[in-house]
Amino acid sequence: MLNVLVLVSGGGTNLQAILDSITDGRITDAQVVGVISNNPKAYALERAKAAGIPGQCISPKNFGTREEFNAEFLKAVQSYEPDLIVLAGFLVVIPPEMIAEYRNRIINIHPSLIPSFCGTGYYGLKVHEAALDRGVKVVGATVHFVDEGTDTGPIILQRAVEVQAKDTPEILQKRVMEQAEWKILPKAIDLIAHGKVCVTDGRAIIEE
Ligand code: GRF
Image 1: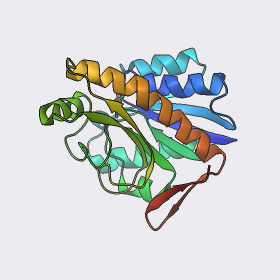
Image 2: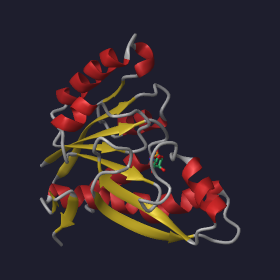
Image 3: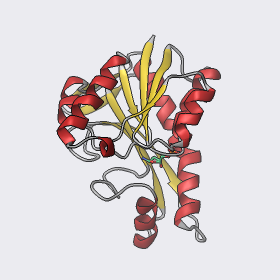
Image 4: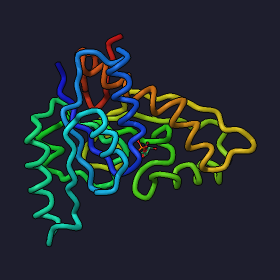
């Protein structure tokens, strides 16, 4: 059984997709053991509560220095003894010591086809605004392992989504979530739970 810790900052629709996938059997041999948010008002915490999963808030705002926060954040994460950490819309930079301790055991969902529209500053609606500004016809989402860079780790799964003529950033964001994010994030967790993902030479290899 893969013990999964989910880190969130907002609405938690990706968390919900994970929980629903466990309930309906699209993810097997995995359970969510906890949810950590940096935002006390994140609706994701309500979703955790409704599912009977321990949730807690730990925010850099409540610490004098980033080092103090990083140390307490790492302790909080370790307390769940996770096999896999899932960043599901988590907006805090992961401390390097956490990346080192959980190398290739932290995954992130990013709402673009990496390497397009990713890296510093590309988060939330900004990603979709940039895609529409550039006039691309295909967008999508990516699940990748987290390394020391921003959106630079080994890519596990991607799914493409078509842009439509009347799209606004909000409409496009919703379609990318529905058609890509909520599908590939649970799928990646299921693959990892069954030992089907390995990283070789900086690339994730999937055994189907
Ligand atoms: C998603 O678009 C995710 O790709 C991005 O942040 C958003 C989180 O949404 N990193 P939610 O909190 O899962 O609803």
